[in-house]
Image (tube, rainbow, N blue to C red; front, side):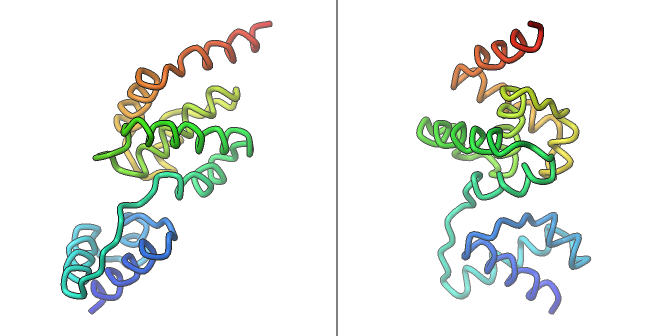
Amino acid sequence: MESVVAGSLYAACRRHDVPRTLDELSEASGIEKKEIGRTYRFITRELGIKILPSNPADYIARFASSLKLSPEAQSHAVEILDIAQKQELTSGRGPTGIAAAALYVAALIHGEKRTQREVADVAGVTEVTIRNRYKELLDELDLEKEIKKTKKKKKE
């Protein structure tokens, strides 16, 4: 019964663009993440509910707030995500990981250094995920120049 409630709540959150991860629901409910996910898929299949994948941008505000990042860094992260989505860099990627990496990049660009560990903890992903998504964003969106500009300004 509890897993049905948790799965239903997860479906409702997804349906109404309230970004919550399976990890968060698992922690709040005491039910394994895997069980909630399984029940969520069962419920949506049985009820014929079509839910689109989460948008990484939905997680930005919450993660940025937890990391105490400026509104500028937050909006830059959303811009990075928009460009990444247009170039189809986000498809097949976990929305929390890509959102976290975009925030990490934006924080670096705005001189608001956060460690990969801090960002990973807030997003509920691994440092390896942050590192991989970060490298993809840097390579594909050519963001290295912007980060280097910030580092130069700090030295001056």
